[in-house]
Amino acid sequence: MAMVKRNGSGGRGRPRCRSYLSSASRRAVGSFAPGQKVMVRWNDGLFYQGQILRVDEANERCQVKFADSCTFYVLCKDLHRGPADGEICCCVCQGETSESPNSIVLCDSCGMGYHQVCHHPPIPKSVLRPHVPFVCKLCSFASHLKLEEHGVESQPDCDTNDQPSSRVLLNGSVDNIGMDLHHVLPYRMNLLTWDAQHRTNVEQCYCYCGGPGDWYCKMLQCCRCRQWFHEACVGCLKQPLLYGDRFYMFLCSHCNYGDEFIRRLPFKWVDVVHLALFNLTLTFCHKYYDLHTTILPWISENNSNLNLSNLLQSRPILSADVTRKVEAALNAHKSKFTSGKEVKKKASLWALVVRVPPQSPPVTVPASGPVNDDVMDNLNARSQKVKYFIPAQWYG
Image (cartoon, rainbow, N blue to C red):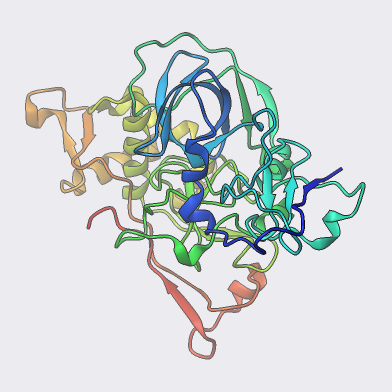
């Protein structure tokens, strides 16, 4: 049942609630303390369990230690905890005033309080009635994620750019995510401050969940709003998302007025090789990889995801054909790939000249209205109002 805090009639009226973006980090600085156990929303869209080591009030962040002994600094807006003893206030604006039509409502799951207008979407008046449950946006989203156990080895010297591991994490199984939670974002899109290429924003708010993210990792960019969405949070993927793989036409639930829409974009062989080397580089952190022992096996392992059958126009896929096409792509694009023989290494070793993901092609989508396969198959750019989407570039 939702618990509501109401002030007496002597209050000053409706409080001025700051926006979610301007106060999300600030509200948590004073409510966290060393030793607290928290759930950390990471840049892959998943939640990891950790313990606060120190609070950096000046930068609105906390140093968190995870189950594998890795430590990271995390923005306070991405930390989630239960309420402190006796604490009844709005976790967004920190205000304690609670009067109709803007009462403080406590989440039945985490116990955190929200003013009706501070929560996004706003909490309806019907929730204030007795015995009516209320679960906040973050808990609603997290409750649709699957809790799993992961055994990890201790890594006390973990690099700060790595991803933390944890024995307990909330795994975003796309089949379990409530898509109705995606129709309203937990932040205001027009308040985000983006870079020129629309790859990152200052507030570190992405996806349906409002968590942090890295555009070049396992994220999809919506062709309409240009926001980035975690692999763990979308519900339309049929194959695992590869690092830097932006060869998708994707519309989020918010922009597509209901269900998400996704369509695979065509590859060229140079894109396949580029994607293979980019994934190997992010995974193993080396520069050079052997064509026969590493690059070709990776491509073969991911052949269904890369649509190699369409590239080869033959079935079954013959390893000799793949080898010939890959070698041709490596030798024909010296601006993208460099051979080991150029630095007196084996000629079969190859690396990226610049460690960036391949550039996906521009796409055309209807400017408005729901999109599905039939709509795209019958799209006529000359007679319909369309939107030309150019994917984010790595440079600039």
